[in-house]
Amino acid sequence: MSVFRLAFIVMLTALFIAPAAAQNYIREDLRVPRDGTNGKGLETLFIRPAEAGRYPLVIISHGSPRKAEERPTMTPAGFYIPALEFARRGFAVAIVMRRGYGDSGSDMAEHSGPCNNPDYIRSGRAGAADIKAAIVALGKRSDVDPTRVIAVGQSAGGLASVALAADPPPGLVAVINFAGGRGSRADFDVCKEERLIAAFGAFGKTSRLPMLWIYTANDHFFEPKLAEKFHDAFKAGGGRVQFIRAPAYGKDGHGLFSISGIPLWTRYVEGFLADHDLTQRATPAPLPSLPTLAAPPQFGARGREALAQYRRALDPKAFAVSSDGGYFGWRSGRRTIEEARRDALKSCEADKRQCHILYINDTAAP
Image 1 (cartoon, rainbow, N blue to C red):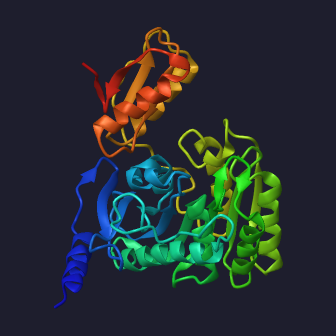
Image 2 (image 1 turned 90 degrees about the horizontal axis):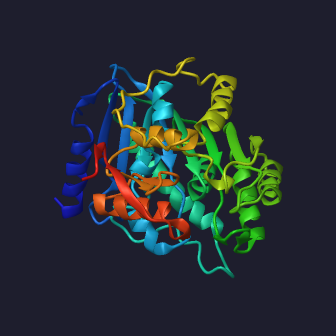
């Protein structure tokens, strides 16, 4: 038996180990078998309601940072809270790190090539191949319904999810694309945007699944006029899509699919699910119970809301606050406490403010 074959079996066996229940949800760290990952498989975080049953599957696909050195630091935990919103609505959810991201054990598989000659079709298909591998592997679980799968992607993950719909695996029933695209090297600067438009058009020629696309009015990666061109090209090819022109969100609407965007994006998603008979729970289940963390007395509404969001996030995490209590910053989903501390302080210390760590995970910092 080959080494790779043995590694494949070991990873596949680990995939089905019974997890420990935590409150009303089950969470597992998995490795999805995948060729070309040096035997590691795709790093995956899996969440589902704790009640026994077979759940429709949502596959969440991340974006791609502009700086290559940030790719290895990414973790599935970065999308834990948005994923939990789908679990609350009766879905099993898998956040899958594609090849070249996080700890998925491979060189970058989705390179679109140089900025003056990008191949966005190839890049989208490479990402789609990883999503498809995850769907096939996870569909073998006894708690997953492989006949009802929804692909949800953000940014480069959105493009990969659209590419997946152009050549869908069995069981894929819908796609949700949050600000999908690729090739943004700076705000409002996309490498050969006409080729990206053409890629959406090419995927539309064979995609017939229902889709929801959400782009905001202040997306700095793919601005509204460019997103409209994606939409027009995709529909011209024959693709089915409900296109949402969402209002401006935060400083850069590209990050709508996030914890603070939940009140907005869940409304669009719930409507789409209802329109296509995919609703599992009309009323979301309660959130897991959260630790009690005291807010500094100087905190206003924004600070208290930020601390509430922090309480929901996964470890390792850290929350920083300025000496006067007027500013704050927090980060979660990092690989180490040291990274969480560093990034929380960096977020808080803009404009040369003096900040200190208030909480590490769910404990007051010494």
